[in-house]
Structure formats: C-alpha cells, structure tokens
Image (cartoon, rainbow over the protein chains, first blue to last red):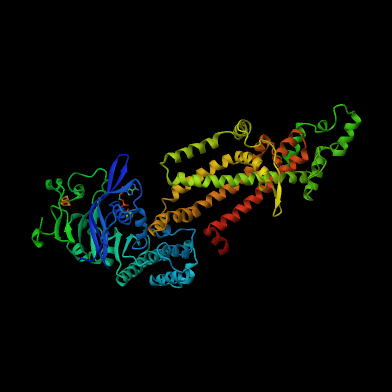
Length: 330
Length: 307
Ligand SMILES: Nc1ncnc2c1ncn2[C@@H]1O[C@H](COP(=O)(O)OP(=O)(O)OP(=O)(O)O)[C@@H](O)[C@H]1O
Ligand code: SF4
Ligand SMILES: [Mg+2]
C-alpha cells in the first residue's frame, strides 16, 4: 500500500523520572492507510495512550519523544514546531478520549466547543460553521442537533457526550483520528452503536483511524488490522482474521483466552498469569518472559522481528504458528 | 450578638466621664446621664434599644449627638472605596501571577512569586503598612501617608479614584489592605491552574488545535474562576473588617477608624450599630456570591431551574 496516512518508525517516548527513564513507548513501528481502521490492543499501562499522544504531539512533561520518526502524509512530525503541529491538531489529526464525562469542558456550551474547533483552523462565517456543526451532529446520530448545540455537557448522557466528542473530531474532516478507548466507559448497546457510527464515518470520508482498546472483542468488530502492544512495544501485527484466528505471539494467545465468546461457553476464562511489568525494571530478553508459558533460555535474548508481510509480523522465539506455515524471513 | 456587645461595653466603663469636662460638678454629670438615658437600669436600656432597632433606629452617638447609623454611613463610602480598590488589586495582580506560576511551576520566577506570596501571608498587615509609609512616604516622598485626598463625583459615585490627588492617597492603604488577598488569589489560582491543566477537557481542547491563549484564557480560566470568585466574595467581608487596622495606620477616614475611636470613647451606640451593619453586610455579600456562583457555573443553574 502506498497511500499510507501515517507511518511511525522505531518511535520511542521516554518519561524522565527520578528513578530513571521510563520508556513508555519503546520502538513502535506502525502504519495506517486511508479509510483503514487499525486496532491498537494491549493491557493497561502498555503504552497505547502515550503512543497516541506522541503522534498528535501532546506528550506532557516529563515525557518526550526520544527517538524514531512519525511520518504523516509524508511529513515528519517529530521535531516539528509547536505552531505547525497546532495547525495539524484537530484539523488533519483528531483525537477522541476515553472518558466522555471529562473531555468536554463543563462550563462551555456545546456550540462554543464545536465552533471553536472549526474557527481555529479556517475563517468561516458563524452561520456556515454552525450549519456544519449541525450536519456532523446528525452524522453521529444525534437527533435535534439544534437544541443539543445550546446545552451544556452535564445536560447530556455519557453516550451523547461521546457522540459530541466524535462529532468534534470529524468536524474538519481529518485524515487521521486517534480514538483512545472511546467506548470503554459506555454500556454495551451504546458502545455497539458508537462503534458502528464511527466505522461508517471512516468508510464514508476515507479517514484513517487508530482505535485504541484493551478489549479484543471490540477491536474485532471495528478494525481492519490489529497491532498488539506489550510493555511499550508492538509484539504482533496482522489483519483481524490473522491475529484472531491464527495468533502467533503467546501474549496475543493469552489476551484471546481471556475474551469470553459464544462457542467457549462454560469453559472458564483463562487469565494471563502475573502482572503488567513495571517498564522501569523489564526482564532482560523478551519483555514477556516472566509471564510466558513457552519461555526458555532462548528467550533471554530479545526476539527479533519475524516478518511475514510488511504488515504481518511478530516478535517471538516460539510462536504458536508452526514455522513452516509462513515463509520465514529473518 | 447585640446583647454581648451591649452589655460588654457597659461593664468596661462609664462613657459619661469621657463627655464631661474634668471640672464639671455632679449636677452637670447627672444631667448628661439623664440626657443619654443612662440613668435607667441596663435591662430597660436594652429593651429600649431593641425597640428602636426594630424601627431602624440604632440610637444616637453619645459623642457626636447625631444618629449612629447616619454617622457610620457617612464613613462607609471611604471604607468601601478602600475595600473595592484592594479587591481589584488582588484580582488584577493575583490572577496573572498565579496563572504564570501554575503554568510554569519549575521556572525561577514562579518560585519567586510563590515565596513572596508566603511572605504576604505571614507578615503582619500593620508592620507592612508602617514599612510602606517609611519607604514610599518618608524616604522616597512619593506618596502621601495619611488621610483621603480630593474626591470627585462621577456617575453619582463620590470617590477619590476620580482625582489624581485622591488616587495618590489611595494607593498605599489599598495596597496594604490587598496584600493578604493578593497572596491568597495567587495561591488559589496557581493550585487551580496546576490541577486544571491535567484535566482531560484541557487536553481535548489542545487536541482541537486551539491556541494556548484560548485554552488558558477560556477553557482553564472559566473553570478555575468559580472557586476563586466564591472565596474572594466571602473574603470581601473580611476585607472590610480588616480595614480597621489599615485605616488606623493610614488615618483613612473610614468606618473602621470610626469604630476604633468609638470603642476608645465608649460610644456604645456607634459600636453596636457598626457591628450590626457588618453582620448585614456579610449576609448581603453571601447572597451576592451565591448569585455570581450560579451565573459562572452552569451545573448550579440547572439544579435551580429543574426543581
Ligand atoms: N505523565 C506521565 N508521567 C510518567 N509516566 C507516564 C505518564 N504517562 C504515562 N506514563 C507511563 O507510560 C506507561 C504507559 O501509559 P499509557 O497511558 O500509554 O498506558 P495505556 O496502554 O494507555 O493504559 P490504559 O489502558 O490504562 O489507558 C505507563 O505505565 C506509565 O508508567
Ligand atoms: S520470546 Fe519466549 S518469552 Fe517471549 S513471548 Fe516468545 S516464547 Fe514467550
Ligand atoms: Mg490509555
């Protein structure tokens, strides 16, 4: 694929703290194409959000991008001036956050919060901008947008607020949307509606999307491709079918085992043993070593990338896929 | 409270001896006592006072002979002028400094601001007042140290802020009175800023690509202004109460200084009236703060309309 909207290469984001540098993102290489949805999956603390914030250039101090490259439509974002980044933010790259209760400003009306997102990036008569707001609210499934525009966030339900946040993200028809667990805080029916809505919009507008979640079931429903993240690295990538049906990395297998599904009813869910490791004190070799049932001496050496295709790879010495099913490079 | 003050002042001393000349004879003294109604038993005096108070009459000053209420309200303008100027200073200086210190907590200048605000909290007002006089009036001779300057009337308000001379008299006492509140506003604003900048809605506003000016000036400020206004509103009462000290140091002809003089001269009706007015003022201020609060915070507004 040549029409990649975003390509990151060996991205490293580091938080300098008193007891050392925490590499929250440790060599992440991923890419998303036009109209494509990439699911970024991993346990809490694996660095998914920090990856998202790195791309949009909003990593808070004491964090900084230490290494690597982020190419957005061919333009390098690492090292770009704050002004140029701001011109991209909310305009070409938008972000949606996890908690809809917290993302809208409680003391500003919805119309204010929507209009400013447009007017920050283009000069437009107010009436025209308002019309755009109404259209997009309609698109995300909000009835009577006229009235909703005049309300404050606390007058709306959680699902409604998240729709507004999604509408804000789509206002300027961005090329990339980073959705950081946008449905985690909502109940299941609303979750399904919103996922459907977001997916439809991406197809419609050709917007690329990175959908961050810790829930493989959610990601299977929306994504085209999946990247599995562990301790700041991407340990496995592939299409949804590849990752769900023929997972290679033991960590992905573990994640899949902890997802309830219809055909395994009655079978107790398996848990991945152990805790998410502290990124300040990772084991030598494979970061998953201490929790992995397949670990052996070999795993004390960090596994290198096993490439099947440019967008199908894993990092493991003993993958669940027999070596002969793929043409091993490496 | 009126009971406490009423009887308390009665115990402290007899105002009559303040009023009559030292060489007055007993007959003169008796006449004064009768005129002031002090010959009656104290309980009866109190009943008479309450009766009058209910009709809006808090009695006449023993010293000046005119009504206590009238006397105080003549002095109130000067005090309110001082208090409002101090409030203005607290906001105009405290909020920008607090924002700066909150946005750049690690800069040297932020540390200087925070250390100064601790000084502002801990140095006694009267001492700072005297130092200000010493430096700006005595040493440098820039500003007058006592009294209120010329006043002018503008839009029906008579105040010294409309004349240069008046302003020059106002600056020192107002700054002195504002000192504590400036420190308070700096600390409130800084704390609010540091907490607010971590909030998701600020990050979301930045993710929309808004300018820093808009993120801080609208998204942040509108939120942190709510607690600041609430606290400042409630503190405004104490600003008036604390003006007693400042007015005394700078010989500012306000009702605080009137209170001190009245206490010294055991002018009971004025003291009682002053305290009643202060209580009423606190009630009014609290009401106003509630109103402003509900204007600033839409979440409060809804509750009121909803039920
Ligand atoms: N502001 C910060 N200061 C220091 N360390 C941070 C900061 N933000 C994130 N980190 C570190 O980065 C790591 C990854 O955090 P991140 O928020 O990206 O995880 P996540 O995968 O999004 O998890 P979750 O599912 O809980 O959102 C954390 O373990 C934490 O140690
Ligand atoms: S490299 Fe070894 S320890 Fe790491 S996931 Fe593979 S088998 Fe487990
Ligand atoms: Mg996260």
